[in-house]
Amino acid sequence: MAGLGVGIGWRSELDLTIERMAGVDFLEVVAENIKPAHLPESLRVLRARGLPVIPHGVSLGVGGAEPPSPARLAHLAACAQALEAPLVSEHLAFVRGGGVEAGHLLPVPRTRESLKVVIENVRRAQDALPVPLALENVAAIFGWPEDELTEAQFLAELVAATGVGLLVDVANLYTNQFNLGLPAVAALDTLPLEHLAYVHVAGGYEHHGIWHDTHTMAAPQPVLDLLTELCSRVTPPGVLLEWDDEYPSDAVLANELSRIRAAMAVAGEAG
Image 1: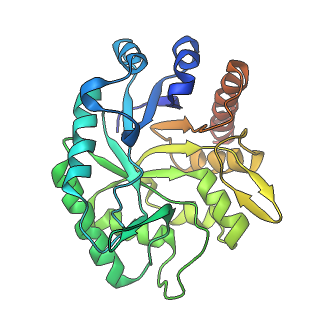
Image 2: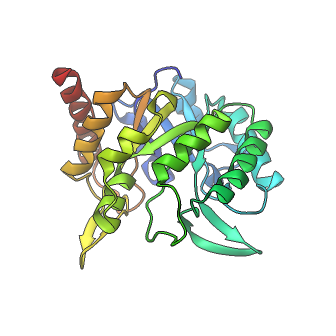
């Protein structure tokens, strides 16, 4: 994967902010929020400047028993073509079953049987897309009682079987450690980071003993420490800041990108 640099998630509320912000190397846009035939003017402006834009899907549902929707795959493919994207990303998540929408990116039952289904779903998605696919680890609110593998083990076997790329969200690793006691550094030790496509960083907050991964706050230091841990193992092709609501000033967002670069640099200095 070619180097992407440090980027930010494009949102319509941030269009002018991103257009005038220095130090943004690439972008990510939620695929469900755009129409490939009528891209937002801001995205056309930023693409004309040479910034890569990655379509990021949130509703494909490769973790379900049903094959991915051909219509959803066609939309992702059209987004990739319209944006001349280097890749497409989605989530390793369960989002619907039997026509019922979960309303949340739920963890996949991590069993051998489930793995076979997900491998087939991922292969179908790869066949339908004109560019490589990367899958993101999710922030889990529970674990299935029949799980046979950790998420990192499940992803490692999925990558081995399909060659799919990894979008590692270090904020999600932190969330799972905080809420479920799943060691984040152990996950980094297990994930096949040689297949890393890029990284997500985001903030949230604790309320009544639960960490809420809201993407509405500055990233806490433990999340940036996990980014440093990751960078001590591999040089990530790209690291992207997600901020989805309660949008702050331009200065706050610029400072977050600086904090990301500083966290990456710590790993380099240690090496």
